Length: 399
Image 1: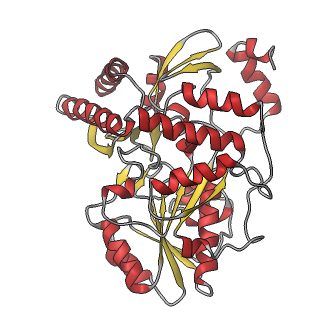
Image 2: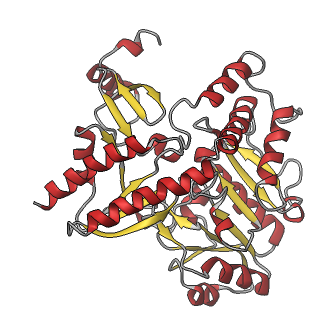
């Protein structure tokens, strides 16, 4: 492994071509080191990262408190099964519960696993009702129940037949949601902000309307906050921008500061429907993840990073709104906190490639949306540097 870290990017790519399943489209760069909002490749080139860890590195690369927690924990216990108690898992669950609605936590390893757990819990609690209404343009993961819940056919192609019991309605349309409810409906499942779908914010009153609809019809409300949770929107969770609470909420990505981790939170009376033996995750809630998660929460709290996330979002929003007045390439600017989408009047993949060539990492989703998920720890001068690059690339593309 030490020798592999000394290979050039082309040499690493050759190893991948021979030994790694080619299910990802990868950029021709081998990253070897990161710090904050900067990363370096095998050739020593620096990149400014506006999309760290695909949304997992909310605190940037190698946040000091998380690094220290993992270093300490790996020398004590790396993994113990969930047939035993560990202090850090209980403490992590308590920290999440205290920052959200009154709940209990189940730990797993990813957003897809968290959503699988939520779907199983909803069906178990509402049996014999089993149907779940989700939304178009949603994304809930790559496992079978998760892609069945996902409202984007491109993620489902080639994997049919899908899991039965899922219906999809337009995001933001309360009337369409109500129309799909029948006697077999168990739950409503939505993202407060659709990430993969194009950074689409829930319309004003939408989540409140879903909560009332769920209450009136005896349904569970599941909020997928895999991408929007853990402070990304300037609140611990995106639903906290409203006055409602869900029955079940799913988390992952930035849950543990870049370390693998997922969680499902639920009201105690709902969580009680998962009896021993009904569901599990072998590595879920392991000591490394829980210590990293606690360190993540401590870093956000002590650094006042929720407030910082709001300020970062406003700085980006101001830049893009001003830029939109000078170029026709930008159609709309959407987002909240450090969850930012810029809808372009052209395909975004080529823009992302040009940004990469200029030393800036970003993402394109939903074909035309330039998506940025910068770290809560990014500095103003780094924001300005990256925005200058974006402005140059977009103006060049327009020309």
